[in-house]
Length: 338
Image (tube, rainbow, N blue to C red):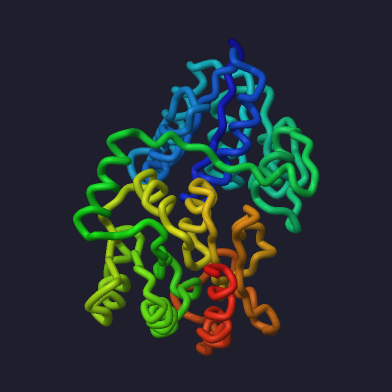
């Protein structure tokens, strides 16, 4: 049996967008063993991927933070004797880990840190979607439409029951609107008062709203919920990643910032409207199924100000968010719900 290792120690969205690549690696090769190295926060994504055999956790903020911890983890991988390594992640830590494994047949991107750690370098195209770039890494050929592959995760009966119980308890109907107002980075968050205006419009249209997110998003979701005594429900922090995919699968539309929920929406294969503030769709992380759209005010000299965003606007104007007015967003929402 050929043993392949995929190293993806980036954020949740990056992890989800690695799944189509793994699916294609498995396709037509039932004797291939595919293992994944990931971080604790994305473990659930890979353990629920039916094409992954084993998941190994790199705790890069804990016991594997030091060089000695990383070396110990690399020695563990070396003992597993992999034939190939594919690394969509481009960090120095990942490159060092690849070196520590001693695997000869390794694949990385041309803009990776310590790129000489990889035997095979693949051109990283800034003008492509992340799914396409990952396909390039494994040498999978695609055309303008064939790359748009749904990331597949397993949804257990237990997950379905938990979500259904939540619906029944709150009397939430199929076809609600899911909204994710949070993000790790402040400059990627559409203004809270604008989200309130969007929700006010939707409530007037008799649409139920379910606010989604992690525990860290509860401050903003609770603040929004408190402005609406009815029709708006706050689920932030109640569901895991896989449970959140099952939750939004029952929605008619997901409205989100440029953050992980965009990609969870691709797993659920639902309509997604992604709002880009400080970042741009050209970075390659836009929703890509036929049902979805995105909005972005790109005619600004200061945009994009960074790949990931910042804790505050570098020039203290936040025009990228402010100029994307609720009126513009509502116009697109009307088109997507009718």
